[in-house]
Length: 288
Length: 314
Image 1 (cartoon, rainbow over the protein chains, first blue to last red):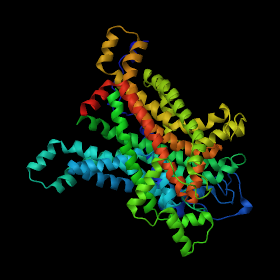
Image 2 (image 1 turned 180 degrees about the vertical axis):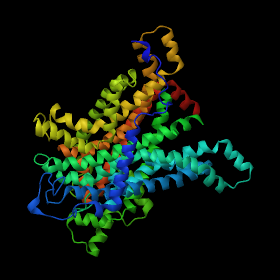
Image 3 (image 1 turned 135 degrees about the vertical axis):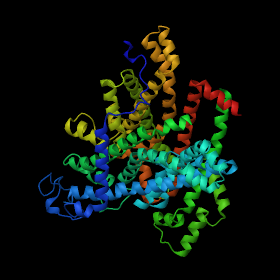
Image 4 (image 1 turned 90 degrees about the horizontal axis):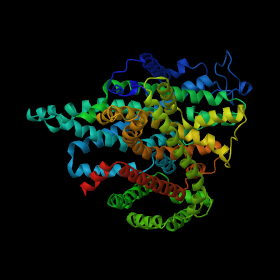
């Protein structure tokens, strides 16, 4: 072997200039998905729930760009409407998980002492479960439905975030400017909100962006199992499940919703990577 | 080392106690009334008398603490009662479906490790060259691919178009290829990417430079000075992957007609079959905890620093 890979340059620290177009494309995809959520009725070419048995299982055509499903419903319209539930649920999950993580983890790290130890033991209990199994169990107890899927995913993930927030708060608390604020006579609440939280939030946003894809998979998986939305409502996971009997005859019906999940997860992952490279929280956590 | 293992073993009952508390609380706080579900699945009309009888039968009329303790005592003896739906002992049913799930998850784990490690090493030895780009490309798509959709894609290609592999059922290796790939691709991608990064990091350290200056061969340096350090994060990550692999298996089983716990658990969710659900969550968590124990031990065995730190804390 030559010396060329004898000592690779510190790849992690070097700013990655390549792939800017990928990040732009990812941002454009996310913007488009957001547009689907906000303006689905304006964009969708057809009513997503309109049954037309005469036109069932058609391939792509001028009238139905992506074809029709087994009830003759327009696939494109259903895919667009499905964004609302598939991505909207993830947005709600993320907000709830972040809120719980910040409140519980923030209080735990900031107050410290015995309170911190008790809260962390409580988190440990939740971290003991395999997440997907815990989510399935909770849906079993609460009942089937998208709202319960959201609750189940939040309850099976919040402890990770509480842990991370606590760690971030602890590392922030040791910074010199916090000591400076204390000496200047700032109150505890004020230090927490004005001096600790902004730094924590910035890093949390990166982690959350990287986690969106993971959450989407969990939601799609649960809803593929039929534990989420009820029959006529379009959702990507359920659409794949609906189409499974046509794998042999009309495989496009399985392909489209899966492509939507794949492309959105890829877009969010790419954005998350780019954000991380910019802010590099892992680097900062390790070195402060 | 023995002290480390003993310390970890001692923690497990405490963890499981906490787990049982959460499970019991969920069972009681959940919106459904177990007595009503029991009557519905037994097809008894829910009259007041029948509800009262079912409550007494299920012990729902006793104080909560007493209920918890007797429930816990039953769980410790692995007595989860009978399924509301089938009236058979839950544990027997669970153990009937468990081996197929464990088999699929275990093979998926082996494949994850067996494929991701060479891929990661290959990428790290040629940073920013075609091998690295190929591996990173695969990994990027792999982490974004929903496992159940990948399952269907594989069926389309290998069963529908090529007619090479059977789309359903359990049997020989040909039945395993597609489910295993569908379950493991994500963990495999994460692992390969992580190993690449940690190898490049380890490769930049001084002891590696020193080893090279001593004139050790490239292969020797990679194997003994870079890989050994770089594998440690992979061992930790494997603990997390096991949870994901179990979850993935439960989903993917539904596609390939794999006779495991996935479909059993889903039907229990539909039936609100509480004895089955609690057995499912408790025993799967127990298995998960034991897997993580093994990984912790492996980690301490590989890295003396962890072992000493853990022992020093006591």
